[in-house]
Picture 1 (tube, rainbow, N blue to C red):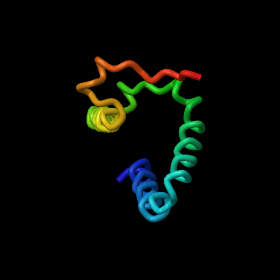
Picture 2: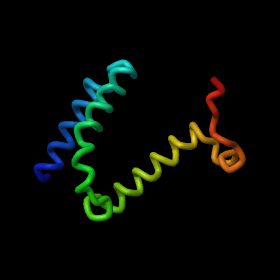
Picture 3: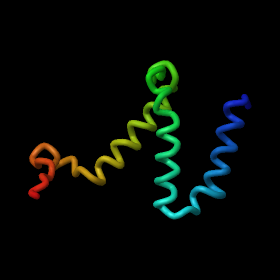
Picture 4: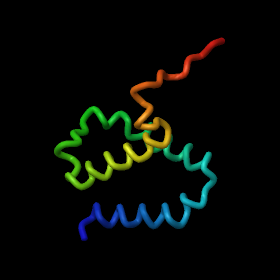
Length: 86
């Protein structure tokens, strides 16, 4: 197991033991903190060469599963986004 695999195993263990037990609002704050921290590096990130096909597929599956919870796929083409009527 390489150094990166060890780091990911440690991160997963930390998540399972600590982060998962936090309230949802605190997990969202942590997610926001992490995403804001890595955002500047995204200009140098090439998904095609930095991720494996399996990781890319997992991400696509995750996004489609969660998008389907908020945008029903069979109604998406027929519905307009909500408008603010204030």
